[in-house]
Image 1 (cartoon, rainbow, N blue to C red):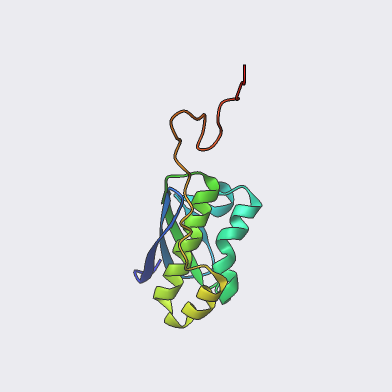
Image 2 (cartoon, rainbow, N blue to C red):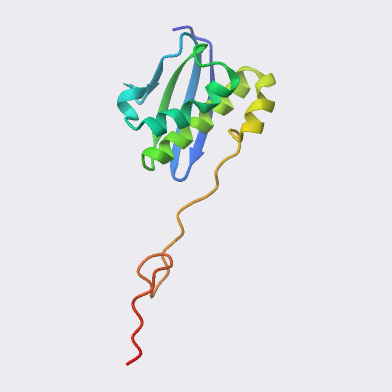
Amino acid sequence: MSARYYEAVGRRKTATARVRLYAGTGRIVVNDRELDEYFPRLGDRYHLLEPLEATGNKDSFNITVLVKGGGPSGQAGAVRHGIARALVVADENLRRPLRRGGFLTRDARMKERKKYGLKRARKAPQYTKR
């Protein structure tokens, strides 16, 4: 691998992904494992490859990712966000199509906290009149 790379951080829910783009053939490694092995669900893989598809760079870069926290779909969203940001670092002209596709926006939705007296964030115990 060449020493030149483009780096960015992506976040989603409680997951954080550090993404590095190298000039290459399209190989993606996540936490030292192949993409298909780390994300077995097809939907997650499709979701994180969307920025590359939208810009036509699917086979232009080798990508290494370090991702921590959250679950599988949150991690896939974090990787997607990181890839989009790294593509902008690599080529500023890609900002407009990535922005239009919504890939550069940080999805701020988080899990709602549990409230006292309730079973979950909103579920209340069954009400009995008598």
